[in-house]
Length: 177
Image (cartoon, rainbow, N blue to C red; front, side, top):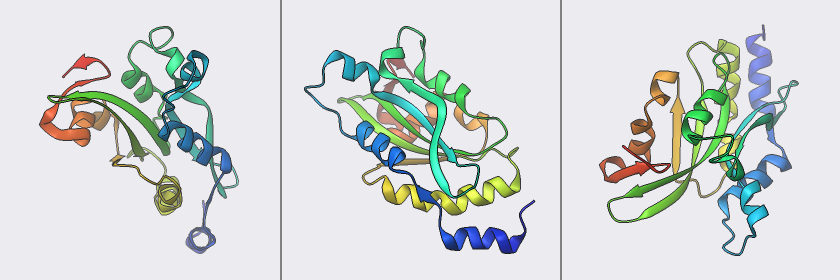
């Protein structure tokens, strides 16, 4: 267990966001109209980030991503697949590229999610919470932020729809609400 003194020294020293994490965010944020089919397939739909084992960096959580090319093949429902990727007993940061329709238009927006389940160790929740600003500062232009503390907050897609546009959202990931 980390001592309180050690925990505050981690806060003061600041957790760094790796260049790989920033590059992933920028790739997800910028949708290239002229992207070829291969580029579109490799584009990330959702990705998880975690703290490195030495607690000094925010890094890609290996293998915890959904690619656009997975949709309709290995992934039928991207939202449910994303929910299942979240560890039940530890914190994560996530980017989710939500596709939805309002009564007026079709939209795509990136959602920054801070996953801090009640079952996560207190130490983990404190370190992730105190490091959240470091990653948010690098993710410029995020319109939607969502802190989630348990699966009950996530399992119903209406909750995400509410974050995206309230009652004006009529579909999420192609499924009616």
